[in-house]
Image (cartoon, rainbow, N blue to C red; front, side, top):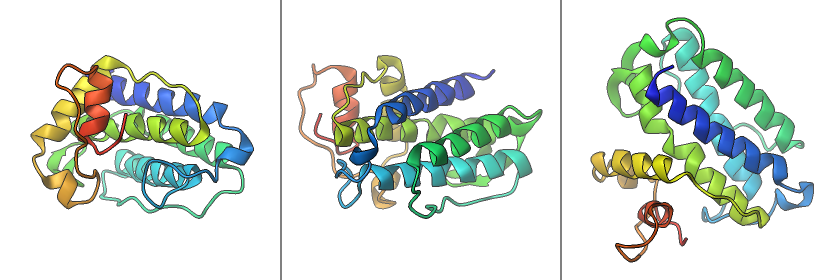
Length: 184
C-alpha cells in the first residue's frame, strides 16, 4: 500500500467513525461550512470520493458532483466508503496517469492531495453533531504541507476559505484547521 493510499484510508476511517456517531436528528445541524448542514458535508464528501472511485476504476476523468440529499446519510456514506475502498484497491488503480482535478499526476499522487478533504470534513461533521474528534497530528501536518504547496489555488477554487488567526505554537491540528478557514 502506498503512503498516499494509507493516509487517505486513515482519513476515510476517521470520517467513517465520526459519521457512525452522528445522531439521526443532527444531520440537519449547521456545519462550520457556511450554508451547509452536516448532511450537505456528507453529500459533498460522497461526491468527491465517488468521483475518485470512477477515476481509479476507469482511468478517466470524473468530477465530483453532490448526490441528492440522502434520507439515510449513514447508508449513503457506507455505499461511498465501500465503493472507493474497493476501487482504490483494484490492481493498477493507483497507476493511472492523467490530468486530474489538480493537474497532471498519477492517481496515487491525487490521493496525496485529496486526503485533506475527509480529514477536514470529519471535523466539520463532528462540530455540527457535537462529537469530540481528535484529528491525527501526522495527517494534519501532511495536509497542511500539501495545501500550502498548492499556493492560492485551493482558495481561488473555493475549496478552502481565508485562514483564521492562530498562534504559531498552537497544536498542529488547530493550525491546520485555521489555515483552511476553520475556527478550532
